[in-house]
Image (cartoon, rainbow, N blue to C red):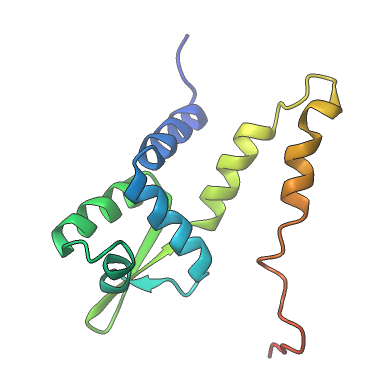
Length: 126
């Protein structure tokens, strides 16, 4: 049985996330939000990892489609690829339950209580 393009993307993403440092980087970038972080800041957060080591890990994550990079001045900023992460969760949960909603209810409930994207009280946009 041949893997679909969607399955191949999921395999690449899970392969990239199967390494501790890369998983920690993605979680850090999710926390940082769409603004992202400079490579040096990510390296410091990873215990002072060398720039070549960070470049390797960030390259692997970018190749898997989980992070995006952009240049701002002399810095390269990395941010989580939120649509790709959402697609990965969707891929896992799409066929959930097999007609038994109680099976997936804990996962759905956990996702519905995520408050990271709600604006802070008193915050204004505009």
